Structure formats: structure tokens, C-alpha cells
Image (cartoon, rainbow, N blue to C red):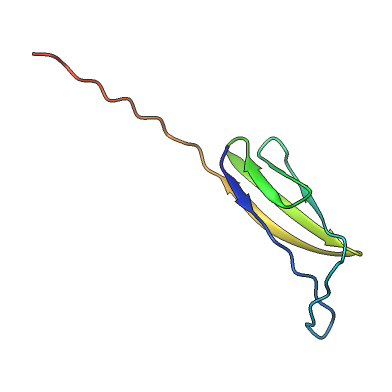
Length: 79
């Protein structure tokens, strides 16, 4: 399926970026979209899923909607 790369930025309460923090990703519906430990989301089937990102007890989410791909067949008639 199609893929998209997510990235997460961990900040403190003053908005300062905190580097080297552990980050985990999880999908609410692996039947719709999976997510790797590096944040690469892969579409599996049409539907909606929420990707949850966690670092040291703080969480963030991203909504993912997978749309069906329409197949088009073109026929030609010989005259």
C-alpha cells in the first residue's frame, strides 16, 4: 500500500525541543493502516485509523484516512 512518513517532535513545557527521547508509534486499526517503530505508516485497506505517538508518558495523535483506489478498465473495439 501507499506510505507516508510521520515525525514527532518532543518539547518541554516551554516549547524547547528535547532530543534523544524514546518515541513509540501505534495504530488503532492495523486492518486499515500499520505504523513502524520509525513512524512509517502503510495503508492496508479503506477506512480510518488513529496513529498514537508516545514519549515518556506524553501522547499525540494523527488521524489517517485510507481511501479506496478505483480501478478503471478501458476497452477498445476494432472496427
